[in-house]
Length: 241
Image 1 (cartoon, rainbow, N blue to C red):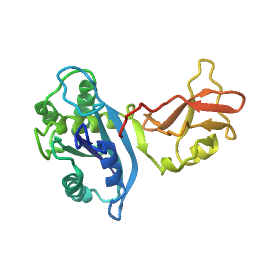
Image 2 (image 1 turned 45 degrees about the vertical axis):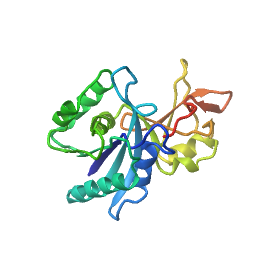
Image 3 (image 1 turned 90 degrees about the vertical axis):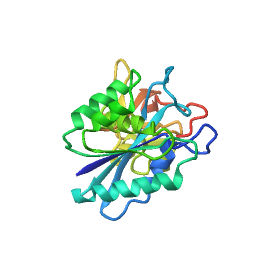
Image 4 (image 1 turned 120 degrees about the vertical axis):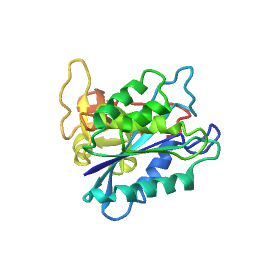
């Protein structure tokens, strides 16, 4: 069984950490019997009328648990984690959804809707359809991004992994085989795309962030010479997630 845990709006403009880091910290202290499959950053729109801290992103953890009765425990732990680490002045939100929930389709639709226009707390509460959604301070507007982040992750085709199988330990250059052994699919997006060979080298540009494509981590790459590829992703200056 999988659980999806969404966090949003736990920081402020002058904070030394963002919501993504808070989510990764939570993944590092899960109890026995619950394992982290990944943490996905979801981008939400930066448009007039939507308050945000820096880049309007939320974070969703994908957890695996053999026992569905662990869901209340995860909710309690996540709420306590927010209380411990959120920044005063933020508007934290938490969403926890179990795989196969009756509200999954509505939540996916909500995530897509939230990616293009202004949505409300009322819209978010309606979309979760009985799953867990809670605010933990300020205006509680974080419930919007938390629900949208879970919905987009549930779609299987949005976001990038900010944690997956200790991806930060991967050196700047790694073979295709080494990345795929970690569960990261390497995919050429060149117009005349060759298939990257197992022994080919990938330049991760010191910032390995696979995309969530087809419900799995995929690293899009471009050709960089015979037997060499480079990640097409880059890091924006000032990004704190």
